[in-house]
Length: 114
Image (cartoon, rainbow, N blue to C red):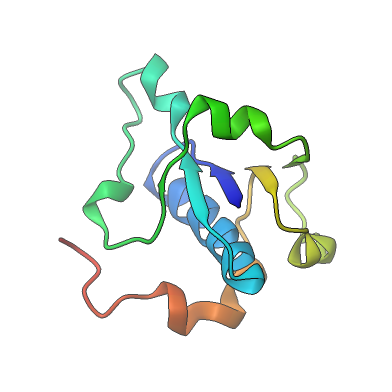
């Protein structure tokens, strides 16, 4: 299972989704979203439910069960992220298409909005 922490505005949400989705696709594993940051505030709002995405919301227990937490804080591209293992929770800024461009045909739906 790959869990991606979703946070920020719609742009950041989409980058975080795409990076996690790429890892889940690579390992052919379940993909879940941690949207807990939105429970504590009204703005910015969680907005990915407006898109046709793959992934369900992770439970607190699922988040806690993943002992390998990886967080990216710097704004430059980290190629090692492309090889992160299965059973991982990722958090951070993924504003670089190299984190997911190799699966663009998988992550882009012909029907983006519901």
